[in-house]
Length: 357
Image 1 (cartoon, one colour):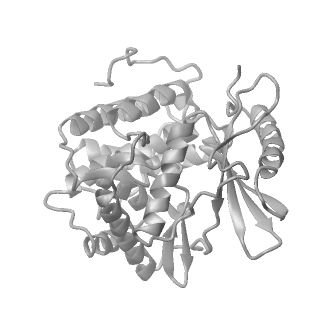
Image 2 (cartoon, helix red, strand yellow):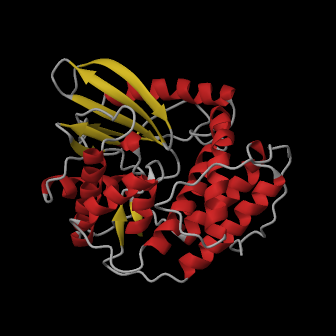
């Protein structure tokens, strides 16, 4: 059987979206909804749609990739229910089907695996347009602090399963990046990446896990996953949530912020939850780690390559600062000149089964 979610060209991407449209119509028959409009949102780790109804309520329908199994998807919904009902955070929550199920397995084209589908409440709000205001950045830090405080108190129920974001997942991402890096990196740039990868793995191996620095995290906090209602930020899209360092979660948010706004975000966070001593060195490690993971995630999508190439003058500048041991989180890092990608058939320099160092 073929993976429902496989795509690595524009043609296969369009074929996937065609399969997805049929799955959406099939899935909606399993809910008591009088829907009147289906709006495609995006194709990422999931394929998402906004479902509008004849009432004031809207919903989010997700078609899940094979990356998550049924138990992992259901566990995400359990965690979201806890965040909303116990801790009062405004987050999307799961909607049960007419058969009393939170996770559906839907039929699709012959020859493809059946995808899992979930329906969730829609969180009202608007994405920020342009650069964040100081107040919004600070309030986002407060929001993340509250999330991590709630996570530290969450008692995982029986059979609760979510992914772990650390060395193993990072190496898996690097395996994928090895296959596609030549689309946007030169050979010399890839060598620079490999040095950073090795250093990140060394750092991760030396970190201790405690209840105060490690737990369930959002793992994908960027501007697209935050909406504002009455100037208050609300988190959406917990599809990647799992176990990881709280600083890793913070790094995902800091990637697109200016140095000044990074400080404001951290100030907001520490008004709720303390970061302790000597956190900047670790946070910068996670900053570069998350940046590389982002490129691994997008490198197989041909529509993303031009963006990846454009970002390299900034990405490689950060990597060089990191490799040189220079603290960069609160400094303006100037872009550098980079070599153009020319390789067409990259060869792996990492042995199968071994970490990259």
